[in-house]
Length: 122
Image (cartoon, rainbow, N blue to C red; front, top):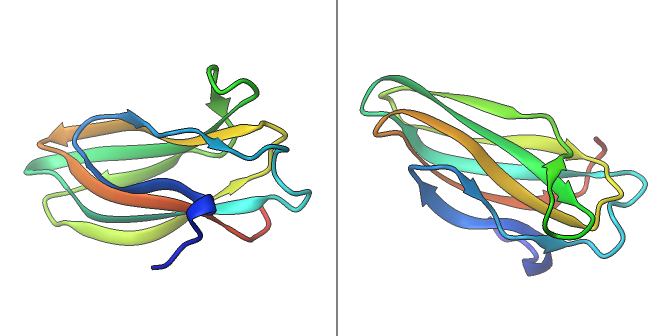
């Protein structure tokens, strides 16, 4: 799915461990109406039993110290690979944003995902 290069929060990546994404400089925070982060995931699975993947959008004033600015999104992982799209609402005055894969658990857990900012109300 095409996206404006300036709105990409996370390029497509396949992960088996947690990841704090790169900083996106908003310059002035979000617009008064806020926005949505569209998270597209695929090949989300474990090799045995069950597991979990959790993402959260984090914000920072200085680009170094981050705190959550969205709800945490939890995806249950099973041996059947999943794909889908989820949205996280964001409204913040923080200058910098990043997407964190804060948890990934389970036997051989893996997920491929990408995220971008899209218009929408939180």
